[in-house]
Image (tube, rainbow, N blue to C red; front, side, top):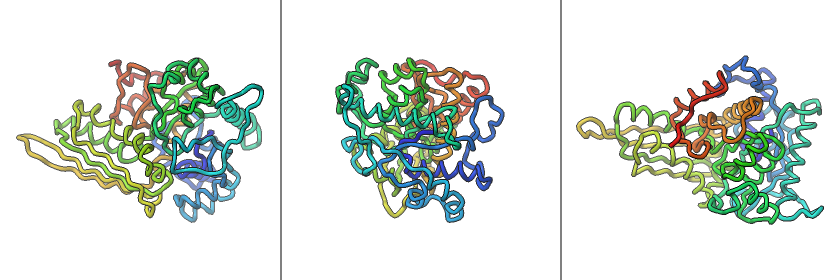
Length: 406
């Protein structure tokens, strides 16, 4: 697995989790599909290996110590393994993510007639090819590489930009150094060019534009995203179907989050926050079948909490005879402990999809996302139980009915 944002809390937790499983001292709690043993082609967790990019060059042992997700016993068990994982220089752009930076950056110069963003893309492609050829635990080749974006949230680009409409226009924009192309899209492009499935676990715009969908299909590459559905939104996609089933009308839903990790720091920038709120706020209306006028979502960076997030919801309902009632949910959780196992599952399923010859958006992986990437014209399914049904059907049969055309 090649991870964008390898030094972050989610990635370091995922790597540590696999190392603990390999040592026999970890459990499969939190891994929703650990029971799918015997599915042909589905990788074992213990077979996953990790590389990737980060703007901070610290090895993962130091990164994990800073993030404070692992307890002392876990750190002692995996420290030596994490010390050996050092992020590659990353491609970043402060115009798209202002609150998170570092000095471990890709340094390339135009050569051979290359201009614009092309040298950066070529550098990322070379990283992936090197990882595929020698990233195994024994220094040998890997069977496959999946690229997973776990970087900090970027502001949205102008999605009406003609550069994103076709593959030809996008590649011309890369060569011209178009400043409207965000880093997440550059990583997605490099993944597609090297034939690596691309999974976008962030709210940033990656492969979910027509140009990159076209390129993904052309190169036989599956793409999936976006924005991992971990805590508060997961609860919404469980509760909202129940309210609809019982004809309890949702009059208002107030959600607030406080967190102090690097993700929260990035979201302290209003432009990045707008990207996150766009994915968090889109699930209710589709599930309930009507607009919730008073659906409020807040995210506040509160440094003392670190990775220990609190997600609080107040839900106002109207029932029989117009009587009002409320539901309140206070979810105190570890952000990375919820996210890391989903990342491991996604890498396994994206690889399985490529083995099965699939390319373009993997709508059957909507189970994992707040804003599932689906083919143009398809209705997005948000209810968690329906998403799980479709995913398991696909695992068993190789096909699934996820959403109908609008």
